[in-house]
Image 1 (cartoon, helix red, strand yellow):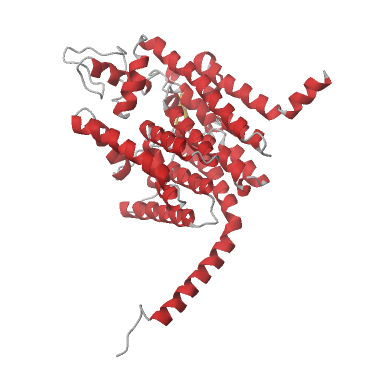
Image 2 (spheres, one colour; image 1 turned 120 degrees about the vertical axis):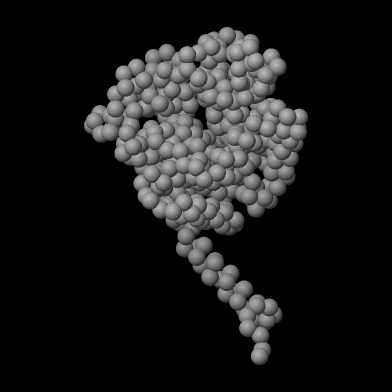
Length: 432
């Protein structure tokens, strides 16, 4: 009995994290215990599967002579006959046909739960692989706990999304990168791009940190796969949807978009160019920091994920679950993520927004009956702040120790440049 108690104490965080994660699935499938932390819109109340069925609808329509976007066939036939509209398919054609073709073997109601429960072994295997790979590291239990208890990951399950595939790919990619398995890393990087091309943000890091073979493998196959479908015709919808989200200047907001970009746009009255300059400036800072040798590769990847969450056009609260799959490797490999304050901030990033607190205090939360509770614009802004604040504090915490050395190195760098220029006489005013 003493040995059992000792074992439980030794692995307490692992057991607690696993229990919470299993409760997430029970809640998403049946009980709805954790739904109180999220708005009815985020949970898709009254329209369960509005995002999930888009991929299946696209695959079904394609195999029946229709479009990969999932539009009804000429005779009006569709895979899902719901009273609410299903969003048009925006996923990559290859992912749509690979995963969608498997799931449409089931009727729509069954397919939803097949996918939900299929996520459980996939995610537990990924978490187990991470733990086993780094089991000798000091903070591996805490890192695995962070991986399992993120509330945004619960929302991903409850809303019937495919974002978990991206998260697992990123986790495996970072694990393989740490273990120097570069060929496998390139393949997983390619798969992550097929799910969602968020990983393109990592491209500068991979090149700067001399992981260019991984970047080459991933980007080449992603580009090739995309080009084939666009050249053939059926895949043009993919770029048509992706381009405005990356390069467009539209600003979606209340009440589901959780970004600094949306918060600023709906809280200020600056010219549109101001938001573009700010976003570009932050990106330049992240690129500059990532290029420095003293900034670890995983710290750089974390900074780009933070940039994505703050500035990408369409970031919903479930997108914040990606932090839970990036931070474990940062905790294992980067001392700046291991400080007490950093670990405290990491735990805060695992929590949901302040929606429940606002609801209990009756601040800006509206009851819409069966559709659930919805925040007004003021409450929505507070929700964004509650998500941004821990992330911002974590960014400061992991970078603060590097600021002085970076400033010192840059002074030396420019002094050497100035001295070299004085000797070579390349720049400056010439003789009259």
